Image (cartoon, rainbow over all chains, first blue to last red; front, side, top):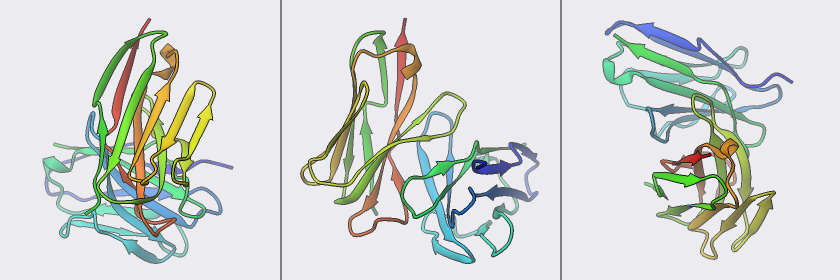
Length: 112
Length: 113
């Protein structure tokens, strides 16, 4: 059973461009979480989704950020018009029942 | 909103010494989880505690959940260099068994051989 797959692992964008981060949960997992992490800092909750539904987006900035988890395909975290402050590691995690989270290896975004 | 605080932020120990990290929540938790993240890696689940006053052990690691379900601790006995990494606690608000999991800022453990 493959683990949580995130891609790309590394992404470089210039200010104003769009970043799309993908997350394929573990097989059978219907709960997906996105977290953001700055160097030597904790994991900041962004959004919690179940298939086709956003359950809790209380950690998502109101502008430029969006997330989806369609019926088919991976979950997508989209950042429009990136700024330097968006540079961070973005971790996706999945869960079968909302309990233990299985994390992907992260997508490291650098904004030039 | 719910806040989860962890202390200390950094801990340096000599190999063989014990290590403890503490976690406090601003609100009552339904459960608490602990994760370990190696440098450059991703968080890996260690354990979940659900019951008030619960104590669980995994080899040299001992996890406790406070009576009021607002605090927790992780104790490592006789640290080894393989214990290096950041230890995070993460809690869910009372009344929910799934949903938003709030992480503490982590304790970065360095073990000197």
